[in-house]
Amino acid sequence: MMKSRQGQLLLAAPSLADPNFERSVVLIVQHTGEGALGLVLNRPTETMLREAWEQVADSPCHVDQPVHLGGPCEGPLMLLHSRPDRSQIEVLAGVHFTTEPEDIAWLLEHHEGALRAFAGYAGWGPRQLEGELRGGSWRLAQGDADLVLHAGEDLWTQVMNAIDPTEAHLSRNPHLQPPDPSVN
Image (cartoon, rainbow, N blue to C red; front, side, top):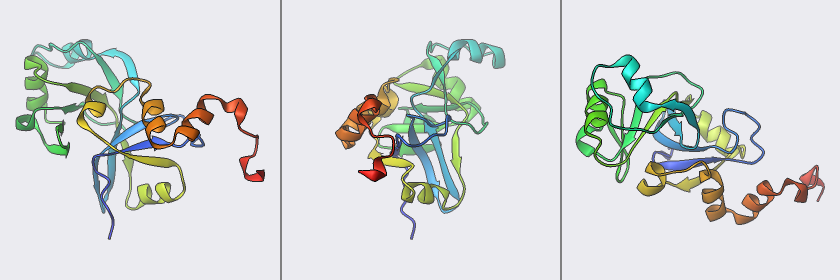
């Protein structure tokens, strides 16, 4: 039986060479036998949410923050937020997810509570994420609302320090690592 990773954080292993995920922290929004959907929390773009919203909607946007690149897969605008009454999925306690245009419009107009916007997402097919975890591409950490809704760009270092300080230190100081650690 597969264990759902919904609400957990994936930290890219220092050895993960994929530029889409290098030093990324991904919140697993949904994880079932059909696959997984996640959002990269620490990839803000230059695009401000208010500017982007004005190009696609007539309703006001009272949120002035960057849109985050949620991953390499294209998708609709997605929000993580703290309002249960505007939620499609409760990802973890205090963190809600929606792609519903009516809920997004309401959340952007009323802007109550924490909110983060994402363009794109990270997706995995059936059992793909489990294979990547077994292969060592990712480290797991438990998500929490404050960390998810208020994460900064240094999130990878912050969470990696909490779960594996040695690996975090080596990743900040690559000159300390031998060219081929397997020969140690």
